[in-house]
Length: 277
Image 1 (tube, rainbow, N blue to C red):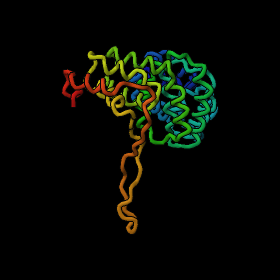
Image 2: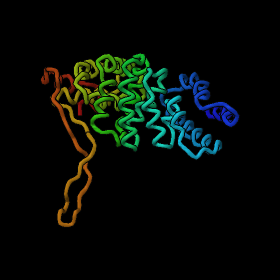
Image 3: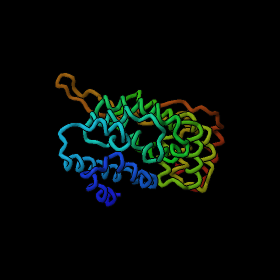
Image 4: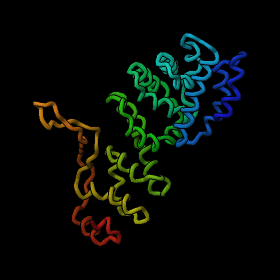
């Protein structure tokens, strides 16, 4: 893609607009693997910066941003990113575009995040469900690292990702061994009660890794699920304004009923030392 962008850059000086260029590479972006999103995104950022310098424009490209919103959401200019987000009203046509829109919710500019939230609410409901399903497991892991999203953006994104259909699809992929990091995925899924009904099957599936089965077993035995929800500060000495950052742990009760005594008996007979422990 980087080579193709460089080939298309020179014509921009002689009449090719960024809108035409994006339409030319849109088919290439459909073939981008989900885990290649970050390097391709960085290529597009570099392209926009280099094209801007070469064309010697001293003003923002707000009109172009409105014409090619899925390209200009990678602009280094916050006004252009906001204008691009405000212009998005059509369904996403690839997994890359879905990821691009979701990543914009973590932008460092509050106005851009607000525009991205509205764009997501306009675009994702009419986007093909298969495209959202395709990026769900990747986003489950990545959004845990998003440090700028506020509760409104988090709730809106979770509303699209944590639907019963997507949770069931991800659990099916996990139990079939199609996920490279099933432990991380299951921990992220446990935050939501839709996952609870699958835990007995995951725990009893001996073909899965013991580390995955133990994650499913623990909440069944304890009756609640705990996870880290960011950080909080604890005072060491208020007089000297000394404090430390510690993980903030939250929990919720298990939403299903299980026979705990039977689970203990079965776990103690398991072949895996990790399960017995």
